[in-house]
Amino acid sequence: MNIFYLDRDPHEAARLQCDRHVVKMILETAQLLSTAHNELDGGQLAYKSTHKNHPSAVWVRSSANAYVWAWHHLRALGREYERRYQKVHKTIANHLETLCGLPMALESDVTPFVDPPQCMPDECKRLDAVQGYQVYYNYKADDWDT
Image 1 (cartoon, rainbow, N blue to C red):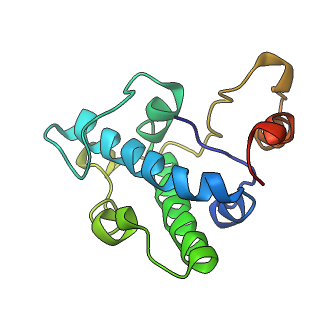
Image 2 (image 1 turned 120 degrees about the horizontal axis):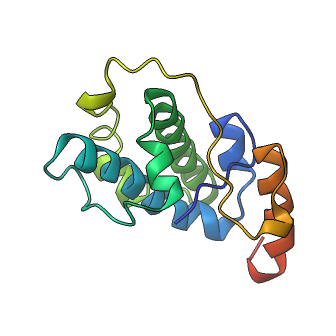
């Protein structure tokens, strides 16, 4: 569970991800958004709550701006998946529109945007979250298909 915050623009952050992550992170991001709805509003929307105390899950539900960034990132990952594989990911087809609306608890939130937490080894962390994630991505690149 993570958000690869490789750029402040959610579309560019999706484009920069390797094939493996474009596939994998669609489901994870939808789960994070679902968890925000489930934990803030009760019930179950799209997916069951998962890793609700993970820093990424806490961040997504911390403000309307964080939720909106994550939703735009999900949509961008879906478009990137479609561009690379010429098909629509099942999660996008089934849940993108469902997750479009903010959790009711965030509808009047005006908290300024804050970068997501850096969920990575300390040696990769930087003062700037984008730089930290770029360092982490390069650090782990040998483990991932690029």
